[in-house]
Image (tube, rainbow, N blue to C red; front, side, top):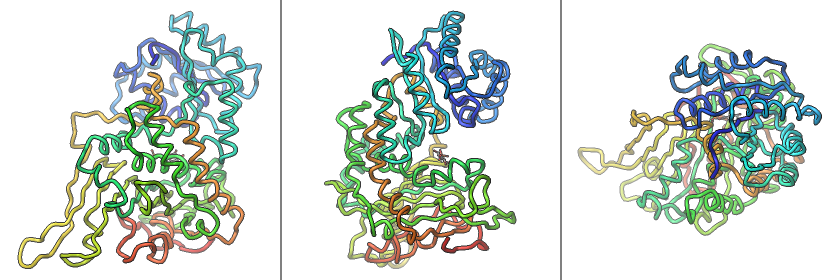
Length: 512
Ligand code: BG6
């Protein structure tokens, strides 16, 4: 793998992602000396801006959004490595100016022309920029290394993802393409692999004989904020399920890789995606519940409904919540339901996976409810990262009454350990040329293959309901009732785990 000194070129440099995530991550890598001091970060954007103004804006971003305490001296030193080039990225004729700029930086600073191009632009620009770069030869290594990082969503559906892959691969090689899904950079997501494949305690139980079902929840309390325009054309299925949530499924369900390298790990996750049992036609209505938040009062304050958000049409039918059940048709998981739930404007921000071990049909100590509450392994992805094991214990005293108790590990207890932000880890891996935590083209396409028929069914069948749920609640009731998604079980104790209660009770549960 090649790394060493080089240039980091960010398209979309005046956008939010650059300021909030990329710059703090690069600064953290620089401060820890994980990337060499001979680095140049070149921001590219349409907005006209001088180097110094860009440096000032990024210093502010780093200080405000870094997860760790920053040091003014270090930030200043880092910002001296920043440059800005204003460029109309749609215009092919504009690219030679970028070439001149990079060459000038290289000759002034002696930094070799190793380049990592990062597309932090609206998705509609990915193809244009990647192809224009190739047209001007930026993809050619000539003794250096050249890589390109593409943000999610990669494509809008299967056909567009295939077309984008096909076009990019005409010029860039798969080894140069880094399709980023920041969930894979989260420490706790990587720990799924370590936890599964370094502990022999759980692996023998990790299959349909012992696991009753798996729940994955990824909820946010925020709404769509200023992203209404993007979000309304995307919806939660494209924004979270097709990428982040299916990647979590891949990590939880994959077979052990032959080796711990990019090829072997990615060879295993693709098998999971290819084994997802398609949901088509009537299945979509039965197994996928979609919702959209309505206005409500949370802690005395009115929170607008999705249709009242900036740049969202008042009659929008875009989903901000999805709960679904599906199966993985393979040897290990056959018959085990996987539940996924994600949404905006829910009561809290939490991402967790819950492994429910199979309760015995015959309960020696009473109720099935206790067995359902215990026998759970909860992997908390964020916040309060950690692992919780729930098991039954005899209540001291007369009789044999069982109570569910917890064994709880928190990452925060490892006070001496620094937990890097997801982008920090991924930018470093890309800099080092390690693609293990990036998504390969076949995986992106396999995930679209699963999601596409659901989106098509929603589009073609207007009778499929879109449920309104009040902001600050756990989504439509239909996602939670025994008659709904959990109806496949014999007894109705099985339902979602709720890390906290609803925050509002005045909003509207309705059909939209
Ligand atoms: C992004 C989505 O990919 O992930 C956002 O576009 C979402 O809509 C975000 O808010 C969630 O990321 P995290 O790391 O806060 O869970």
